[in-house]
Length: 461
Image (tube, rainbow, N blue to C red; front, side):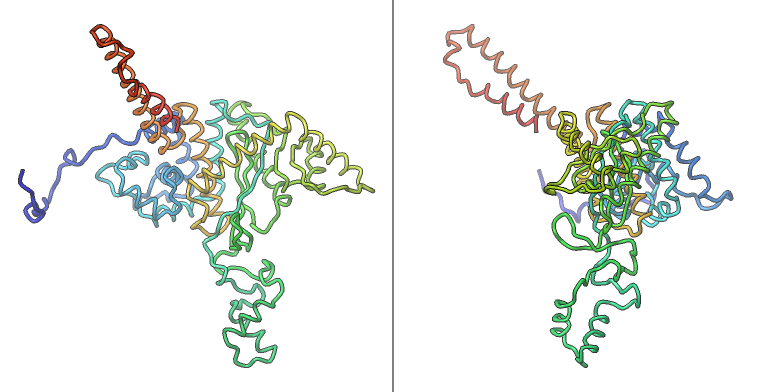
């Protein structure tokens, strides 16, 4: 065949094109099934009723529907996109994703500024209501129990550079503050080396009580998981088996300081789920956490709330309990429970079902470094991401796959399994044909049977 050239194919594009001439795709099966679940539970009607107060009553420029707005943020979780700009680009680029938010081929997807502004205008309580609605859907499928709660926290890197921080009292930058210290020490014209020497000798130079970022005051200086010191936020999760409630705290606050607010939020969420599902969930009875939450006052407070604790205890050596009878009783009771069979099982379950959501939400979900500023904005995205994670649990229960990328793995596994079955059937058929002839089957090559375990191993991956 002759080679076609690009200049030969160049032509003037037509002025009009019929809609039926546009490329049509069957859509992504994962998002199609998820849309069926949302439509069956009247998701769009619920969010439209919740967001009605944020839209003008007069007829004006048509806006993005609330259901479309929340679905676009869910795409950010399922596709691992951290910014609204990336969500808008991915939706415009993929024909398979356009069907999930309900965009036609002739419609232009929302711009990133529209997605961001809609998220900012809808308040935090509405996002919490949407998250509670998702928990109610899971409760109807018996995926929310409410008896045992596990708590864990992680740090989220803020979109703020530490070198841009300013003094809380005077508003001076780090460079201006060092120059002032150099003038006070007798150096009239300090060089870069002089400032670096003063910075090395300065004690407690990274205190959050002295410094703040001008554009993200909620960010705090803290040590990240990889050992780096950075401005960050703290996201704390209260997980009920496969689902959970999430709060965002200051990164410099300890786990024992924020556990009370997290438990309160989780209890409120479960009470709302119980009211909306006719008592499908139970009240919190047990709390499971790692050793970062072990503190005398925390255990005493949880005992006062009639909660059984399974909090891992750090090795503090021999302790003195003089005039601390209440704390001693709480610590010893917790120690007895965590050493029992149920305590060990709950700690293993905590490691599995708390670390996995962190990996899904922050590593795979693309939110380890947030592109938002302020606790309210970050918490809105976290609530939507956690809602996407819980919807993924429901999808895994119904269809066996919880993420769109997991469906791709299922296709490869199904193909490998089909190839293995075809190879085995072909080998058996050839053996039968050969055994009926002059050549005994014992003289046939056996290497074709070795394809079955290899294909099965590929399927398990």
